[in-house]
Image (tube, rainbow, N blue to C red):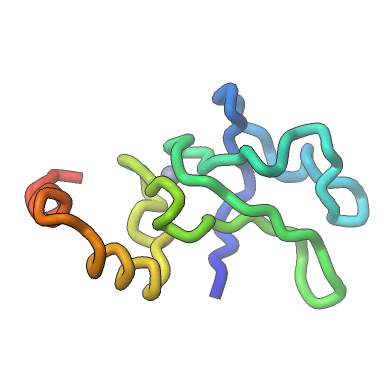
Length: 107
Ligand SMILES: [Zn+2]
C-alpha cells in the first residue's frame, strides 16, 4: 500500500511547495513544477511520486521505491518509506561495509 503522508514536496531548488499549488482543480499535475524532480519536504533527498486524482482516490504524493532511489536522511519519513521488497533487496545486495554502517550509524 502506498503511503499518503505528504501534503507538500521540495523542489530541486530546495523550495517547499504545498501539493495543492501544483495540482489543478481536477486533481492533475498543473505543470508549474517538474513532477519528475520532487522530493521529500523534510529531507529533500528521497524522491516522491505524484499520482493524479481518479474516481476512486484523491491525488497524492508517495515515496518512490528505496532503493534504487536515495533514502530519506535524518527525517521522520525514514522508517516508513521502505517497502518490504525494497528492504529485502537492500539487505540482500548491500555490501559488508554498508551493513556495518547500518548497524552502527546513529540515526
Ligand atoms: Zn525525507
